[in-house]
Image (cartoon, rainbow, N blue to C red; front, top):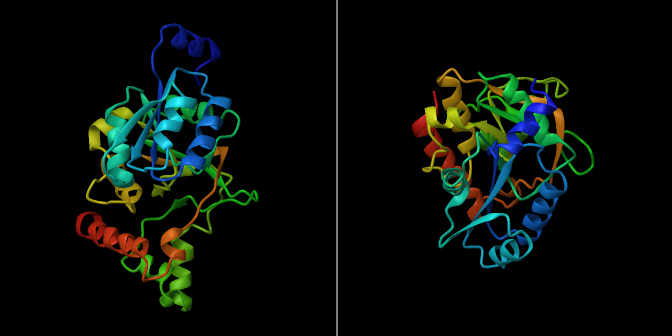
Length: 272
């Protein structure tokens, strides 16, 4: 583990260590709180923040420019989606490590430093995700096993009422997993993850054929296929104000069908 003197040396040399990428779409209030949390609990190493705004039209760009002048804002003229938007942010960043954050993340204490130190100490690891908690303090299922063919349908349709489907979903969500231990896992929920840039250089960025869902699954699978482990990191906690829009909106909603179409695209490219 690197000592504090090494961190101070990096700061003096003005070497960028962490690039925080935030992909925003119509979440002005959450974006404001997320950025305030970052600067209230900043990493101890040199860092930068890049916000990609997907043509929100809600004043998000102006808010960042006025309240957070240190932040780089990339104002897209269209909604790029989760994966393409994050890739754009990565391409315009310089850090040794990429920290991808959703706007509904609340930063706590020295969580970023702990993630950074873990990756510094474990050079073989490509990506880590922290312990995510709900606002009530309960642990979120943020690390999961790779899904089976019908897993998304079990989670979002009447099929989920059957015992065989419920058993598979429990396995998928790793309800049997001890979330107090740091261990390698299949994949990490993309709401908060720190990724080694050299690993991205090796396997490529997030899959831009996927608009909103399953990009984190596909990315982690690419890392594993390249021999680069993915870890659930239990030694830091972050609050995630998670809302499962595709599950709560119903089968007639646009967001539900974006989820299903992304699943079909994922199957054609990544499912084995």
